[in-house]
Structure formats: structure tokens, C-alpha cells
Length: 402
Image (tube, rainbow, N blue to C red; front, side, top):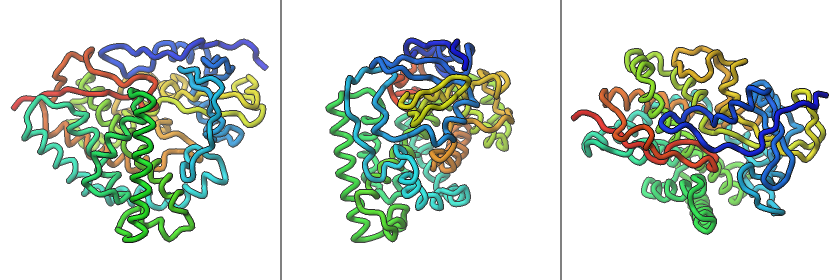
């Protein structure tokens, strides 16, 4: 075993103002020392940080590393003390291992296939056009986050799950609160509880009067109402927050890379590659945790049972051993295999939906407003705090020529 290993003493949170697409410099430096580093958590727990592509991918595929919620006691930025974390609630399959995980995921797999998501393209095009019409009517400047990036995926996922149109604002507001990392603990708990109450009522309504949606489709399974409620929460949160941040941050990145922006406008066929490259380059779901269930050798080091491992997606997707010139946004890049949607049994269930939304919405925005540009200096664009699970911008003021 190799006992010589870099130690990252604190999780970095600072990104470069005005061009905040690169991971924090200390994370990139850690990767330069090797694909794995020691990481002492604020709680005193001795864990590991994995920054290399191959090692992150291997952990994600290794059943000796657990995703169970009750094992996730240590936060890389906050010392919560000796807290006891409860197991995942019924239906919260992202925070479970096999076989519980598959019991919830398998009934959903057929509902999120690439073919089924492609069939939604026409509806997503209409939703996108409606919001672009509203932006054009309102006139510049607008906050692209509230006018475009959030409402499109919110409306799409609400329609898929059968959430009434009138309730979409409620979801957007409350999911923002418990995923955004910027409200008090009291507000976070209240938003979570309100969402859970609503979902319980929604499942009961579907039982009484099923409609044409994913949630109603699941009523014929052996899943309980409580389990359906938990699954709906996971799908709503995942289907809204990540795509919303990709739309806003992706637009910001393109505006800061005008040559790439021009290429995408000039070559509509480039859209698929462009989406994959933006997913790799931005990695908005920047890191996840796993806990070793037994002693595991990883990168020449022993990960002791019970140790927490931080998987850094944003450095894995910038690993120079996997992606040439990794810090360059190149929409013509053909190096596939990024980890923006994860890997293994927990690979993002809604990845095909996200791809369709991005392929439709980004080119439509750029083509509708050929002179789209930032309405404030890039350094003044407000970023989400690093404590948030998903990285992005809080607001993105943009303008264009009338």
C-alpha cells in the first residue's frame, strides 16, 4: 500500500468571480497530486476525497460503498456533532442500497426511457416557446433564472407526475428552499414539511381519480401511498433543480465563450454534442458521498469500513487523464463518458428527460434572441453557495436588442 497521499484540510468554496465554471482551485490542485486525497471532516471524522475520473467511476459501481442515508453523518463544510441520521423515508430510493433501491427504481425505469422522453419533445418545445414569448413581450432586461430556467423544467416534471398546473409555483418555491442552501433550518424544515403534506394529498387524489401521468401509472404496483409520496418527492426535486441550474449556468457559460456560442447558433446539428459538453464542463451536481461497508483498496490506499468518501464529480469531469484540455469548453468535443449523471445503479433516472429539455431550450433561447448578453458585469452574477448540493446561479440578468 502507498502511505504517501495528499491531504486536503478543508473543503474549498471559492470560485473565480466572473468565470465561475471551474471547480475551486484547491480541488483542481488536489487532483494534480493524485486521484485520491485524505480529507478530515469538520466533525473530526477521517475520510477521503476522490477527484480522479477512473476512481470516482469505480466507487459508483462498487456495492462495497453505500448510499444509505443513515450512514451519511458527516458534512464536508459543517460539524453537526454526534447527530443520529434516520434511514431514508419510504420511497427515497436515492438514499438506499440494494435490494431496497431496485424495488422503487424498477417500476420507474420504463417511464423515463430515451424513446419516451423524445416523444415529449413537441410539448417541451411548446412550453419553451411560451416562455420565450413572455420574455419577448416583457422586454429586456429579465432574470433568466425566474423567466426561463426554472419554470420550464418545473412545468415539465409537474406534468409528468400529474401535479396540477396551478400548483407549480408552490413546488418551485419550496424545493428552492430545501435544496438551495440559503434559508434557515426552520424555513428548510417548514418547506420540506409543506411539500410532504401536499404530496400526501396528491397521492390520495390520484387514488380517488387517476389521470394520465407517471404517478397514476404506479398505482397498480404494490407500492404504498407513503412510498409513492417519497418517490414523487425525489423525482420532483431531481427533475427541477438540476435542469434549471444547467439552463441558467449553461447560458452563462456560453455567453462567456462567444466562439462556442456562435458555433451552436450556426450549426443546429451541434446541439447534442453541445449539451454533453456543457454537462461535463459544468457538473452542476458537483459531488456525492459514499460510505465504505468494509475495508476496500482504492487507488493504492485502504479505505477502512465506516469511512466516508466524497466523490468529486466536477474534478472527475475535468480529469486531464480522461479529457484532453479539460478546462476548455469545446462543443465539438467527442470524448463521451462524463459523470454528470453519475454511474452505476444510482445513475440519474431522468437523464434522458434532462437532455431533451436542454437540447430544446438552449438553442431556442439563443436563436430567439441573437443579441442576448449579460445585463450586468459577469463578476456581479450571483452564485449559489457551495453548501448547496447543486451548483448554479441565483439570478442571471440578461438583455438584448429590441
